[in-house]
Length: 146
Length: 329
Image (tube, rainbow over the protein chains, first blue to last red):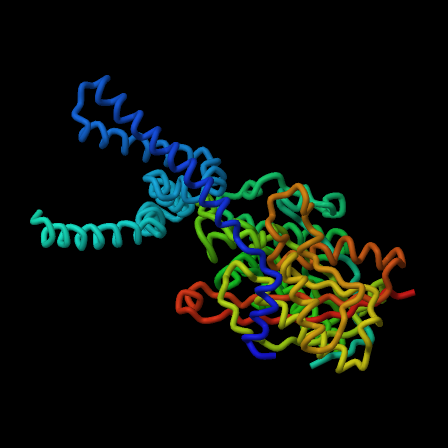
């Protein structure tokens, strides 16, 4: 049998991912994360009398801490598995990816384990985040002059 | 290539499993169940070593043999350099043939041991096949605590070690013949769809076995494939019909049997080296001893997956080996 024909059999029995359902869940939970983030910004700026720029830094720190802490408690992966991109795209996903890798390799030493493996998943987020920030910064400079 | 055997018997088996299998339908048939993935060890790799070591200890105890009286230990697992088997063997102390054939390891070790016993090179052997969900996930996929979405049609690696004592002393279960499989590559690149990767290899070895022995598919009371899962099982049936014009009868897949598919979060069923032998050495052998099954064909299927090659966009080859068992009257 040709590979093409075999692929037809495989496609016939392999279930499709429920894309619409996934997108809907991600939309709702991602939106909820946005609301939570905004609440934290308002909270920090009113309670500690911070500018909204400084307050958003505190908000990011809080969410990263929560993502790491809940991963360490061992159930955040189940939340991420359910919410999918609703928790992966926000900063919590980045924290979760780093912390899960760090947990996995902690028994293999600080340098050879945690140090070299912590960015196993999150490394590409940083690399392509920096590269795309550079490109968009350059475009912005060329189009609207900075 | 099919080998016929006249005086190779399965005398005793032992199984040690992890928490998910312990909640599955065959929980009462296993010799030892653990409630967590560490088994009082520090890491998952060390836990898998302990699995193998314990299952061999239990096996020797059950068969009333000392390790110095065993001629050969043949076994393997999924980790790089089959490290769990190697480390366990340092403690077990039986001359070792370490093998890797992905999830077809259990049948390949049975085949090799049977060949050596049949040729009178050895009197007896123990074979082991182990896999550990977390150590396998760590090596082949993402960190275990990472919750990134998995495809709904993926499978769940079983945690456990199944060991078997073979010899030329007659028992209720005879190893009748074995067919060595060929590596097949049908161009599947999806690392989650392991059933689709392995189904053509299973189909080929079943067809080869029937051709070499001149049997019909009805000859067997049960044909049990290794770890195709719900999707792979349907693919195999369809492919077998189209490619070889064989309608699978009395057929089941151990991936769909080892867990409770309705209540356990295991996607499309089990997978891993220990999936087939955990079902075969408990549920199937029990039925054979009771006389409910007489002739059984075990088809262990292995996806020869390597993350480096997958990152290079190459498709995943697969292999399957078949073992024919007969109940002795």
